Length: 191
Ligand code: FES
Ligand code: FES
Image (cartoon, rainbow, N blue to C red; front, side, top):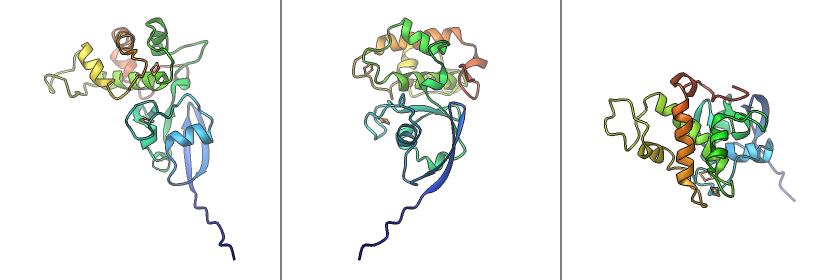
């Protein structure tokens, strides 16, 4: 006699790019798989699925996170912004525009994660959060290439577009006020 197939689900409420979804999810589901497989948000990329590459980076309540390492159940009630939530082809986010102008990508696979990560990194900088290479943790971190490279070091690019990515992030950082990058959600058409 076949055993009944028991499926246990957990109710999760997520707001993604301004739209709220009520979902019943496997409690083991990651935010990454939920965004792609349940909600069709395909800009969020699966690279390693192990927290090693940064391709899956999103902004969760304004902070950058690796969505492959976040359980959707633990993100219940959260506000998630992905690359397509930052802007669109008619009104690009300044970071998206800068990546275009500085040629900050080749194949583009890592780019949505790079852009979300860069927006989160600038917010952290604006809030005075030190990094591993900040010389004096009591002082505000400076906008050096070393700081930017360190803060973006969790986002790998197999095409090696790093130099142009740093240029793009620097341009936005120099043009942004502290209040712009420190907003709870990134500057964007939905922000
Ligand atoms: S897919 Fe999440 S860090 Fe690589
Ligand atoms: S642009 Fe190809 S992996 Fe980064």
